[in-house]
Amino acid sequence: MSENFEKIWQNCLAVIKDNVSLQSYKTWFEPIRPVKLQDKILTIQVPSQFFYEWLEEHYITLLKKTIKKELGTDGKLEYSIIMENHVKNASPYTVKVPTANRKALRNDPVSMPVDISANPIKNPFIIPGLRKVNVDSNLNPNYSFENFVEGDCNRLARSAGYAVANKPGGTAFNPLLIYGGVGLGKTHLVHAIGIEIKNRFPSKTVLYVSSEKFTHQFIDAVKNNNTNDFIHFYQMIDVLILDDVQFLAGKQKTQDVFFHIFNHLHQSGNQLVLTSDKPPVEMQGVEQRLLSRFKWGLSADLQIPVLETRIAILQKKMYADGIELPKEVVEYLAYSIITNIRELEGALISLIAQSSLNKKAITLDLARQMIDKFVRNTAREVSIDYIQKVVCDYFDLPIELLKSKTRKREVVQARQIAMFFSKKMTKSSLANIGMHCGGKDHATVLHACRTVNNLQETDKTFRSYLEDLEKKLSIH
Image 1 (cartoon, one colour):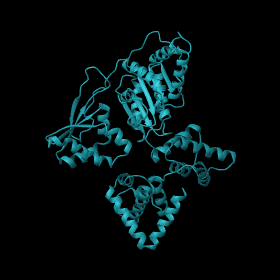
Image 2 (tube, helix red, strand yellow):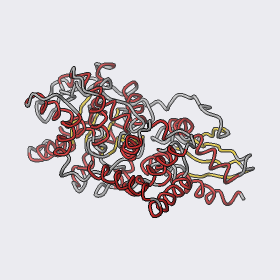
Image 3 (spheres, helix red, strand yellow):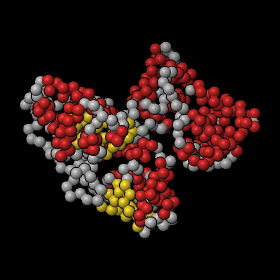
């Protein structure tokens, strides 16, 4: 049995993959390596203490179920934690914990040396010889941690960012790579890290720069014959924040120079914070030696915010601007724009502008008109949350009842219809649909879809419900 540990872990992963999002799976389960199986104890290797703690905090129930399914009720899990990050004399150490035991490990993270150079200089390829205290950090004061709304979609990235801000260069998260789609808050978060470091460590030089600007500066340095000054300047920065690192793809010389800057900063214990639209494993046109360095620290993803987080973002924006809107208008905006925080905030600004210019009260009708224009040219996928809202409004049921365990006929029917439309109109997995409907499993969702299909063929009233709901869902 001990020889089959890899197969057993693959079986566990197959179950896990169907119960978590693809991004979460790639972030938290792909890096895990099975090590051995002995006396019904499976040992898995994880890259850091933080990684171990996050698994125990957020995936303990899922891990327990899968291990017991494969190894029986007395199956246990051990973690072998290996500290990479090129720390001298670092070696793996094992934590023996039954999967029910949480927060068993509380060692300090690996500390890295911090080297603050004497006589630092300002950007030498602009004005040689000046002290680097004069360097402009290029940070936007509006992008602070206070203005960043935390949710399940960004909790890992925010927590890691805050840890880095409290101890730049002194955590295992070096580099910290934050990745995600357009408009999900990557730039906001890295600015917040930079601002917090400046507040806590005023003597540290923090520099935010986009990959495009970095490339242009390098080209200018080559033209002016002062490439060494360019490299020397960047090697003196205490905290370097490089935005949109994917734009270095295909730029061979720029990648070469960044490789040397990266190595110097990392070996000196200085902090690197990077952003990208995709994880390192999916980056094309970037040298392997650079990609391997991106993987040294932590890669944290920003996912699409769930409904509650979208509402909280709108409320925070309204509070900051001193605006009040009816609850149903805020909910409608949050239900309608689901993939992009920037678009969500833009829709709010447009709605307020329309109301102000046309001297109209902000109503649900005005919000509907504005949203239709705002996203007319954008392909929108209806969300599971929105389907549930429309179904609950149609049957006059509270959404909490739909997600409860009640077996009342009218609630069960509404729940099954919501599952049916979620399968039909979204790309979500059956497990994800079930999770949104009160933690049901994929078999329940399949049964619901079959029941709805059968009823629409035999029951005229039920068929009219489905037709009405389909029209409502197609309009938005």
